[in-house]
Length: 128
Image (cartoon, rainbow, N blue to C red; front, side, top):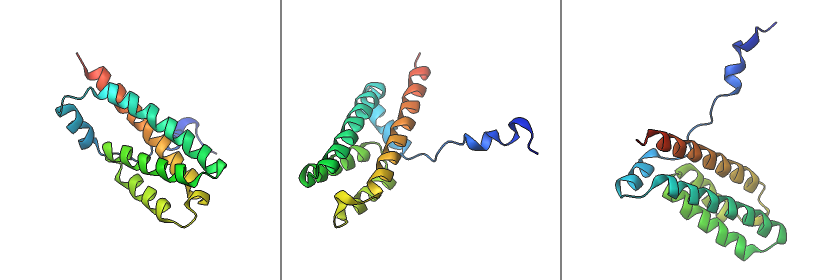
C-alpha cells in the first residue's frame, strides 16, 4: 500500500535542461530583450514544427530538409547542442522524411520551447 503523496513527487520531475543558459546570458549581455526574443523564437519554432509535419505528410522532401536546416539554426541560438546533433542524424539519414524519429525529435523540441518559456518567466519576474 502506498501512502498518499509520497511517490507523487517523482512523477513530476522536470526533464533535463535541453539548452545552455550561457547562450541566453550572452544574448542579454549583447543588449537583447530576452523576453521578446524568446517569445518570437518560441512562436517561430512552433510554426516551423507545424510546417515540418505538413511537409512530411505532403512528401515535400525539399521543404522538409529546408525546415530541418532552419530548426538547426534556431536551436543553435539557445545552445541546444543535443537537439542539434539529433537533428543532424535525422538530416543525414537516407529517407529522413520517413524517419520515425522525427516525432521524437519534434516532441523534444516542444519540451525545449516549454523550458524556455519558463526561463522567460523567470527573467520577467526578476526585473525590477
